[in-house]
Amino acid sequence: DQRFSDVFFGTNQSYTIIGNFRIPAEFEFDALPKNVKMIMPDTSIVMSRMAQVSNGMLMTKIQVDFQRPFYAASEYADFQEFYKRLFELINEQFVVRKKKA
Image (cartoon, rainbow, N blue to C red; front, top):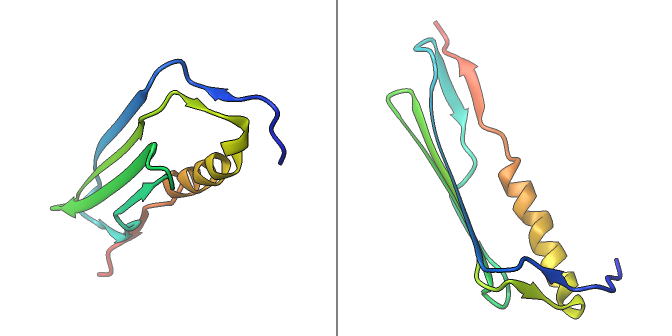
């Protein structure tokens, strides 16, 4: 994609999403997405995702930090690729299965 205008957020941005989810005792988490840290090639955007399970409780945290408010149209290819991968990681599923008797 060719972009003709710049991306401007107005200011540096930081987003944190924290979730704690308890599942019924007859279920278990079968698979968790891997903990990951992704950094834009110029280090201006950092995304991290952590997840762990303890005693039937899923604890997860996603953090995204934009350390620059402005991205020139000429930088759009890297920006777009990072965003694509960012949303792939955010949308990975947590798998829950009923425990075998």
